[in-house]
Length: 332
Image (cartoon, rainbow, N blue to C red; front, side):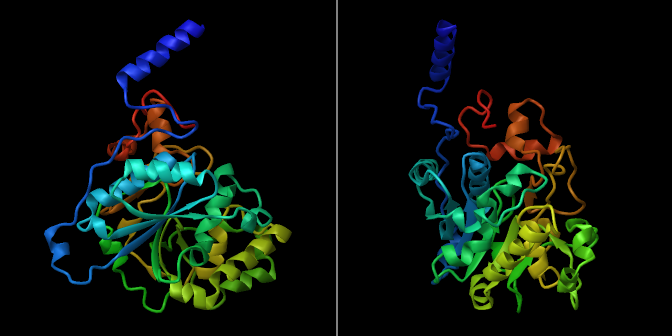
């Protein structure tokens, strides 16, 4: 058996001579360098685009693909700054980003899991219960005060359009912008106990619509002024005592912002491609154009591709996969 294992290892290293298996992290090939187009050089004060994402071992392959897709479709990729939020293994993750994207302008921030560990209640899917899933609530505290606007992206999406178009949307008086889905049955996001309690009054005077928190444009200045992190934490404490919802970090955002969101074109979040939260069945695109493809739900394209059981739309994610030997190793 040991001899067979040795033969397999030699076969792998012969096929990929420059790669070494790195613990639980996938190993990535270096991305090409992306440079600004001529239209970027004509501006004296280029607009810097700030994007926040989380990094961890489970979703790292998706995060890398997301970054690659943003750079590939940007007219001014050198004007983009990434802000990565991590909980563990900061030095290793920094090395992976640096070696995969040598020219990337980025910063790494440590998120203290203790901020939310005592406030999290179990949900319908284990991935939704991880502390890093709640880091999006603390961007205003984690990022420097000089960053007044941020795009937040989940780690299971790819951008197929110039992200500058999303960056430039006018938020008006709103703190947050995102695609809204007013046809969704809003009552399903909360328990009957919530709707039969005084907490339901939180939506009085608003026409709440569902929005997916995996793609958001946030005015961090207004967020800080309005102390919105504290408002979200308040609902997490209420949930801990009364169990008013089932879906991780989403319901607090709905309770605080639904009905007070600057609507963004649906093309900027073709979500649900990972299926539902239980089975992860294959789904089709929503009608209309697509600028961003989002595999929210249980099914992730890198796992389905490695298992040789991909959904048809997973082939749209595959070109952005920088994993060196995804066909031989799974990050599951």
